[in-house]
Image 1 (cartoon, one colour):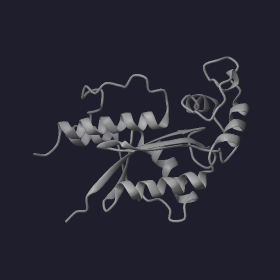
Image 2 (image 1 turned 45 degrees about the horizontal axis):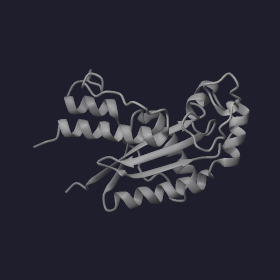
Image 3 (image 1 turned 120 degrees about the horizontal axis):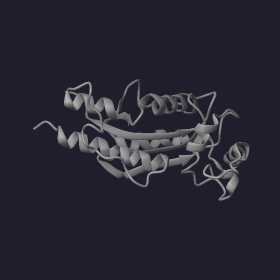
Image 4 (image 1 turned 180 degrees about the vertical axis):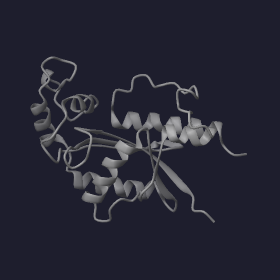
Length: 200
């Protein structure tokens, strides 16, 4: 008998495209099918590296930053170095965050297998798996696989051209690159896809 699974919707905001050279700034997650079960943390950078445009997007939803123009990417006064310094001061240590995240996953999954799910599983999965592997004693609890939303659509429809837009699932309103808000939205999309194509 196949072991039951628990889909965990995960979203990451980061300072650049790859972990190690760049840093995870925030991590949000929730259970697909029960979005009240949530996890959210903001982290200290692990390097000084950043891509300016990525940083501007990654900090939009952060609560750890002071409410000043230098930390607001929508202003001409945005100062990347000041933002990085503020996160080094106010963010949580990655090792603590990832150990807490691993315990949270184990708790919500229980006797089931936790399965990673996200909008962009290559990006979010790369950061999440790398951080779990490097900052927890037991490593990546998700294993080596996961689901992306658009691939989920393709499988549900049996059509390689299928995607969220083609399925008529509308984009959210009010979600501004906050990792938890995005994870919750992505979870609801997974739920809608599964509801439409659930086996009877």
